[in-house]
Length: 541
Image 1 (tube, rainbow, N blue to C red):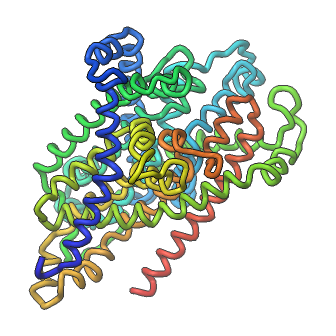
Image 2: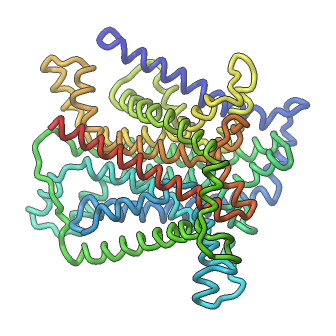
Image 3: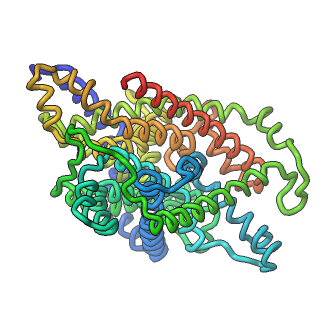
């Protein structure tokens, strides 16, 4: 406290914010789940969770989340490994294409799969001649969620691989080890933290997703959809809260297991010593198969998004495919308010997420304060809690004095920050695990203050994590749905809710046009972010 009082003040401020905007809302949901209008009602809780359709939905949610998380992590790792550690060509192209699913609402891909493989789909009906093709159910959900959430794993793993120096890999190669042995014994163990955190990120995103299950789930019910239905259709807040709490349990357990596993191991690779970087994995036996896999993954993404773009110029899907710009004209005339709202709120939330996330990861990994477990537990909850439970908690917590925020932009920004905060924290943690604390100790020994050490030593080494946090926070804030759908108002409606409404109303071309506009906006912002980061790096060099 005496050495760096500003760090102590920041820690207190961050802890207070976490308690107010994370712990209190979740505690409110837990309370409303067991306490109804007539007081403590354990019988109601038991009757809700013991219902056969609830357990069926719970089982369905776990199966979908486990399958999607496993496949998305594999896809993300393959793409990240290819563009960072090998001599694969067209890396910039693969990088840009792999980010496409993150810059649109996840349920947009459901729209694409219906248009491609549905009853009147371009591929199923027009090309293959399959009539009455059924795309609804678990297989389509797994494909969609894998494609939609693999960029989360890609960004997380890529950031860690970029910061990893090649000294151990070079030493392994110089001692005669094959590429496979180097990969299995050196690289794979070191990238374990990002693999596990990526799996958990996708696992939680899959659990909380109700846009895709709502559109193409068919008879395959999930808990997120059940909870949403209880609140918006049945108007039973207690039943919705009970199901939301049930969603929280597997996420929380998985996160605790991940923390226990990683906490017992060391992953330091950045020691401050000069190293020679390069593409060690340059064998054609490796690069050719990797290139084929990357082309197939990229081709699938382009096919889906190309379909969405083409539909945005059709008069009416399945009836009149003639070219038109009337859907874009409709958005310009009547839909720019919701798009502007989303851009403003996402722009406010993005720097907050990056700054708070990296500060929290640094304070928890490199400093020890009395009460730090409160901050650690609060951020754990922000990660584990599905968007449904955040949305319900915010409705209950911020609807009365002295925290009257319902209907304002503040409550939506707060929900965006809370739901995206853990990605910045995980990215910072993954980077800090690779940075030897001896580098900071050497700076302190030479007379630098902790503040100067953080700004001049730690912060530059966190550049990949900073870009990941900024890119993810902006794109997910702009395309978020599960938490904010409960918080919108007449003054602050959002574009993702508008798109979902257009899809439910079968105005598919208008929904596609909204998505195309979102894609180009996010691509422009991310390009500007990357250019700014490169400019900063060149100036420092």
